[in-house]
Length: 127
Image (tube, rainbow, N blue to C red):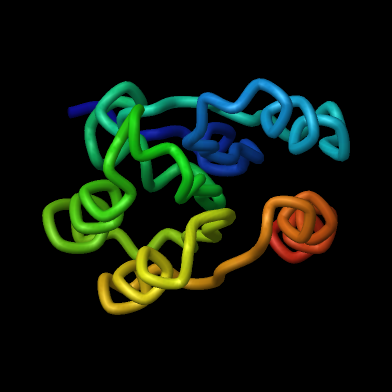
């Protein structure tokens, strides 16, 4: 297994799990050119677990139950891969949010609130 380079570790990358084209555009707009948003509906599309470690955080759409199961995503991330990547969820009803809390998702926002909070997260993870 090849080791990631320092340059790869310093890349500013975000995982976005949604198929909502409007939300993708809204979350892409505040990003500066040095930040990359990787939209997927399956964590395995990103590569093995050690590739996921290179991302700064995950934005997870709780309304995308047709495309993927948010609970499966958080379980895979936390239990199977044992990765403590920050997971910021948006959308969804109270029931799914409660289940995601129990599965160790980090924060929950409405759709508009997530768009408003993204610049703050970018500043916090801009190391």
